[in-house]
Image 1 (cartoon, each protein chain N blue to C red):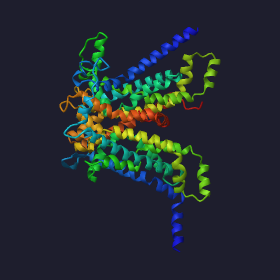
Image 2: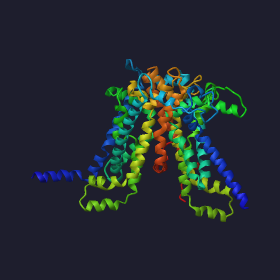
Image 3: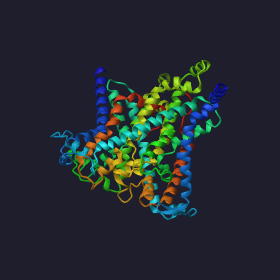
Image 4: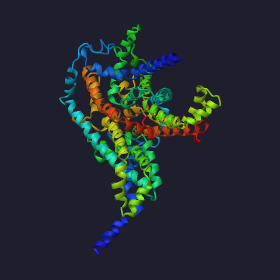
Length: 281
Length: 303
């Protein structure tokens, strides 16, 4: 009976582990291929471990194209992602407080609008927003990639923080009110510090989405020195522009590094974000 | 005097409804500026003959008429997109549910397993993965090499065949089942153990417990995920744009990519705007249909 159970356990682990390895195999393969001499990547595609380790691909890839190094693209991506994230998280927390704690006329309408903004996908707005930003003269700059996020247009973050604020007892607000604290004081001194976990969750998601964002960069950025990593990688990989797959895999591996690091260090917050909303497909 | 006036202004600001307006002001402005206004502009242009180079001329419902009666590519992309969404979303949810059930049992390695299954969905939407995917299924890519290693020598062009190309995109989508799996895991943990105990007392085996207890209690989660992912499935863009560009012979041309091509490659902006509105209508319709089926299969009582 006992032996049977042990065998069952072993089978369980072999199956689950084996399938898990299949799941991450493509990623491991990419990272490993980046260390192979570039002309052997596809002749030895079946082998996972490179015969000779080389970092040449990283050096070649980092040189980038058209005289612009990948360092520039990484800097651009970091700039866009960080600024947009700060905007999203701060402003969303303010809006979330207003919607969660203050009663005013039109609150329900705003709440529905927020849910709508959550359901309404970027792809539907792709053309309308382009036309509008063109009228505003924003095309070709980072403005379309940054400014809208300072207006909490991603309902997901407002919703995430509203959920969190709902979990904070109202007695805290009322006690502060009696002590003479204004609504603004309550937000700044009580609510904002208390919602730190959801701010962190928000930062992670916002950063990762901005970092991966490809569509808006494709639409609005037309000068190669301004490209973020996602767009640079796409052009780097286009047939014709380069057939140096080693360098391409090296840069692709680097580009997923921020997400992987966040995933490893901040898994708890990621899981929280996903289970409160279940949104990200 | 001055002090008193100052105070009243402060008092004015500190009324609950005024504070509410001020706190929600950024969103109000943002919603109008970046959603309503652009939508309005595009609604107008969708009734115009307009390309970016020449001024817009009002043309009535021409764009919409053309779309439905005189544009075979439009119907092709609708077919491709529905096929992709209707196959990949259920598959992804089934995978997510099965793996969640398996990983519910905690062992020492569970943390590692969950991470391995979850990781692809974190980075799956990135350009890096799309680029990788294109190379993996190439004629000399890793898949054909691995097939060769197990004795199936082939140089099949997975992405070059009208029958298989779409499946490469479906597999990529299903591969990212990790976040749905986490959602299922957290719902599974909320099901009280007492229900299973009661079921055991009544003589139900594991299999019956799954169908009679677990699954019905999960239906709200499944429903929510189904709705959100059908919408997202219909909107897939990056993968198609980078991996196949709709090739071969438009067999993988997604609706959003077609819309992009019309607007930004052929410069038919008015037509593109009309396509966007039709897409919105389709998504709303999918959502409505799903909600209409809700009462037949979604359990909405408590525990």
